[in-house]
Image 1 (spheres, one colour):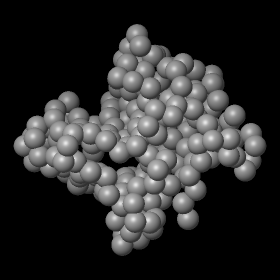
Image 2: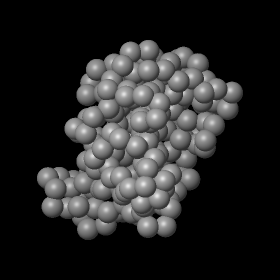
Image 3: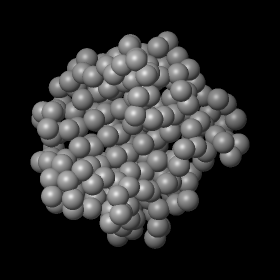
Length: 208
């Protein structure tokens, strides 16, 4: 089952919560998502995979990138206790950069980031326009499925979990953005070859 709800659409069966869930069952990426990047990349639903997945693929030039987001529908606020959860896997941990983020722009975000050029581990990061704060999660990136979870609390702290385990250096209490945010999933190739990422589901919850 796929449930896709934006707060901006005023659809919420619980009245006091925004709930969003997409497990990518079907023959295309749904309209709630904006899929964009360099010419030649793609985000394609592969319904034959158990439960459905969306596969992000970059083009083949260095720094080619592709992303999924809500197309600048920003309705998520840390002060409303927002949670983002993504189950995904990388096809490679060589010459690749990937993010799972709550995002406004390049200087206002909360994210997991893996950058092969910066080390072997996932980084946990925040930026409110004066940062960023970046810390080592202690978790080595690999090519297995993992559940990445960000919990941003009204108390001004952000907790980061992989597979239900809170990361080293979590929570972060500095540089927490006050901007309205959206889910943002990003993949970039750092070499002259295409990279791919499979996303099993994306879930968002917040109080409203």
